[in-house]
Image (cartoon, rainbow, N blue to C red; front, side, top):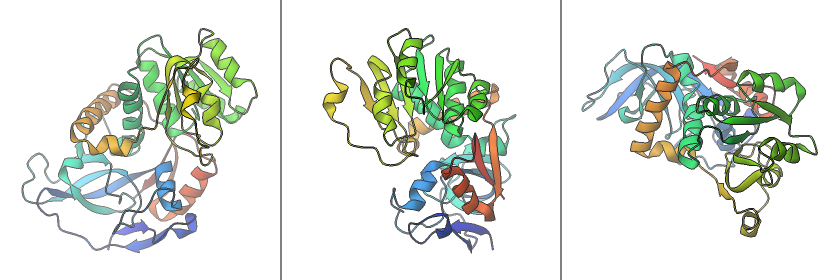
Length: 324
């Protein structure tokens, strides 16, 4: 039977167990895929740890993957057996060698886009598109601050922002990671552990601050990020890898700052059929045109717990994947 990685309740990486799943036949509107790749993301860690609740009746982790259609059910018109596909979104279940899900969730891969690239880019790529086109429609010449720019989301956001003509100030946690941010196209790289990084960022961005700041670090970092944004700019809080975010008073966003704060969810974005269609279509176009999403670490499916431990401890850069 196909292998999968499941949890029965919240916990550390040790809560993840290998299980055998029965092969299910696709029902109306469904397709079964034989997977080759699953992405590993911080949202998976949030689910595993209990920060985000495990949906009832679901136990296999993972929100994105790619593979080949193995079987189709009735009323599936746009897919056929043998099509290469990728997906992101609910329901959970990408840490598995095979799975059955709605055919509407599956995106056919165009020529030149491999399962490996697509399976590691769906969540991060759709996140980048959402933030730079929906949360704040970025214009050429504007300034963007990207935290954790050596990571998977950070590198992809940086690359896409540069394609859109923006100026990127990246932050990293150590000098050793600065090269990854520069390779992604960042114009300037700062250490977010430095006491004066906020003032440096403001001075670089026309002495006024950035137009958009993207913060996936969380913890106490968000309050510093707010101070790096110019009036009528926007902060997108994407996660909290450094821990819970202390409460923010609405008064902190008003005059003289007058800035916006968004907590966008790529999974909510992907659940809207039209936004999903638009976003994945744009992403496939970016990937066909050469948008690079480097893979920094890969693990066999059975080693998913080690992948979680390494990602959580900051031992990885770029995208992290499981292979089947």
